[in-house]
Image (cartoon, helix red, strand yellow):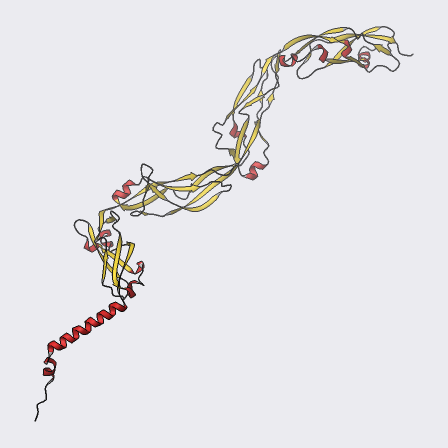
Length: 429
């Protein structure tokens, strides 16, 4: 009877040949796979390294700062094209575990995919993250605001109010020490109304250079800002006088105010009814023998809800009331410049039209200088003269009657001037 071979003998029989067949089959499969799904390489730039277990340092009262931009790496992946063709940067996991921190302050970077795909190789241009480990520090810095631009024409920038004037920052001690203040930029270019909004806070060093927030924490990144924008209006300033100067002196009639104009600020409704700004306290020139000046604080005369514009740097205004001595001038007035009035109906009166009368005038020098004998006119009020002299009827004779002259400003006659009035025909009985 023929002996049947056992399983061990079958497996060991021609073992070399069988192993060779297996290797040839694998090689054939590999060649077919590479032909149908060739190898490919893909690179992702700017992959951020995720720092893990940072709480280890926090528990020690320390913080880290990534140096030399080593927290960003370039990752290269090699594998089948069917895999690399569908990978994205978000599929790459780059991690640095703080528990592996070395004595030279580097943390090894581990690379992996967050997918189930298998690749041949994954590598990065950096092997480790370089860090600086420092004591955790914090402090408060002042929070300021800076307006940028110019508000609309006819408006001015009012107060800018922040909901806080200090801000707390924390982070590596060296980074915290660099910060001197925080600031909010407020864009007011062309603005014609008030603003209320949340605005971003930025940090600055002692040289007014902006400090990066990458390694710093702030109490808040935003603050609420209220910006008041006010309307402006430019108006004239008015003032008045009271009293009379000393005997022999006159008020010249040209009161002056310096400055003569003022720019006001307020809401549009508050400014709408303002035509000018009046200094309500008059300047008293009683008994004055020279010009009188008075300096006042213009702010005490501002209406409610109105202030001086920011361009008005001086609040003190000066009111000057000019006082000067009386001047005199004598003129020869042609009688032809006189008119007879209030003449009784039946009387016929005449004047010597070729004659002149000498009249002395007083007043301001500037006004007297403009006068000539030919420019002055007057009238003889016959009826008024008859009443004052209790004359009931005019007879055929002459009378010396007073003349009333028409003058301007402060000019007046020093003494009453008279002219001869001739009665050519008296009144009927």
